Amino acid sequence: MTQPTTQPTPSASMVDYDEAVRRYDPVLGIEVHVELGTASKMFDGAPQTFGNEPNSAVTPVSLGLPGALPVVNGTAVEYAIRIGLALNCEIAETCRFARKNYFYPDVPKNFQTSQYDEPIAFEGHLDVELDDGEVFRVEIERAHMEEDAGKNTHVGASGRIHGAEYSLVDYNRAGIPLVEIVTKPIVGAGERAPEVARAYVSALRDIFRALGVSEARMERGNVRADVNVSLRPDPSSPLGTRSETKNVNSFRSIDRAVRHEISRQAGVLDAGGAVVQETRHWHEDTGVTSPGRVKSDAEDYRYFPEPDLVPLAPPREWVEQIRAALPEMPALRRRRLQGEWGFSDPEMRDLVNAGAADLIEATVAAGAAPAAARKWWMGELSRTAKTDGVTLEDLAVTPLQIAQLQRLIDDGRLNDKLARQALGGVLAGEGSPEEVVAARGLEVVSDDGALEAAVDEALAANPDVVAKIRGGKVQAAGAIVGAVMKATRGQADAGRVREIIMSRVEG
Image (cartoon, rainbow, N blue to C red; front, top):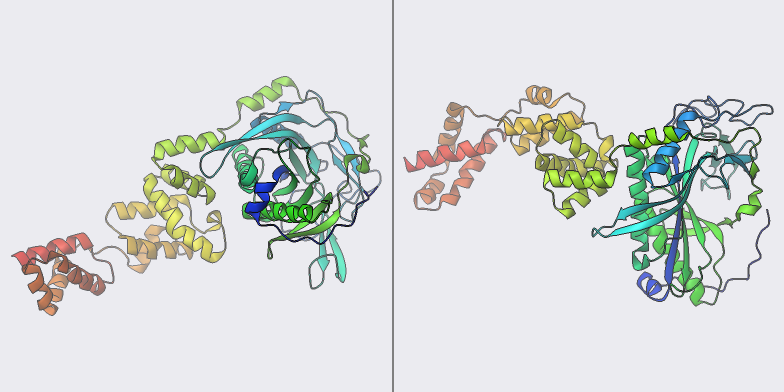
């Protein structure tokens, strides 16, 4: 490939982010790759796998062996059309695949089968909601189908190719179907550019899940974002030279990577240098990017039509059937649910950002009140997930079990403290809430005889408190309630205990 000639860049220091966006206009471009959740790969019958033994899910096609011919995965085409329609794209009447030529050890054919000048979907847009409720429109240039590469593992202290003792290649991922979604230049975001980038990728992730085309788990690489950033003096100036930060795989990192690149590029320009058009690597631990390779332009890849695959011509009737079957889009669904649940805008944004919307909806469907469902998922369970370093979805509890737990509270069989203990048992794999309560003996003591005996004992042991209550300091009854709760290991009905206390004292 040809490499552009660049002038040496003077030593530059980072510019404070607020100062950088005050003096420069940032422009974004985002390329999002989503792995499609088909049973087999894009062009062969090898199964999709995650975590299997290396090179155990391959065929001659995914290994690029001579004479092995590809066949297009029909489900992948349908999924690509679903994505295009959900992003308000035009669906091509005809499209074709092309060979993108480059050599990497994880691309055994020495070319990637992709789409170039004839993508399956084009000219779309997505309206994304920012943290304060403002809606920002992102224009989409194209969404095209392609195949994934394999995975390189560099063995050595750093885990990177530089300084590695040797490298291993796993071709299980080679050939997995992808859709790549490419935006037009995103202008007008100003100081909110990091937020726009994060909200856009988050909205895409939600759409992929709603469409059922991918698990869309960023931590597994199902969704990967390449973030392009450039600066120009003002919105009327030509676009600046862009950098492309590769494979950023969390929403927080997308925000941080954009901020870092804006500050870095402002420093380069302030020092009289020129931004190099290059790929850059994101370092999660340090929050910085580092140079990768000089970025190639399209002509450097020597695209040409794939001779082993015929053009695709999705019938219009099929496209309209897919359109009619699309589910409710996440943004519309969130607004509907917010109205049904009566949550405030901040409450709704918090639970969406926490990935709790689907879980709360399922918990409500299982019988819990919306406020109670929100309390569990955004309270105790969020704290547990954070402590364990997992997502809410990864916790060993289901929405049905949370609804069952809340029903025990509603029926007066558990108080909040006992319910948290029962939840701990469920998370530990001890069974359903009912089973945990029975096994641990957690149910609230509501028998008046047992409660009266405990109250009488506490009153006898605290005559000074009794005197205060009789003297009009009703709040002093809390000390007796506390003593009874301690004696019953927290299993007494606190409300009923207070009633018994007052009847005994006043009587």
